[in-house]
Length: 71
Image (cartoon, rainbow, N blue to C red; front, side, top):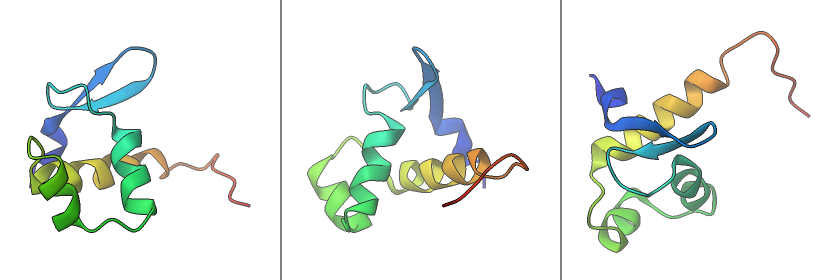
């Protein structure tokens, strides 16, 4: 699955979703607040389920290094 292709970098270390102005951070915050995939897709009709998977894969990749310290 190559869902990472739906992400592109914009600005200063700010990742966005495939050609939209929707930030990866915004989608992660919605998920962390408890929004379901279905709710997100209904509210943001320009998103696709692959976008949600891509964001989670992107976040997992950022957290996968030796220097990460969790509190």
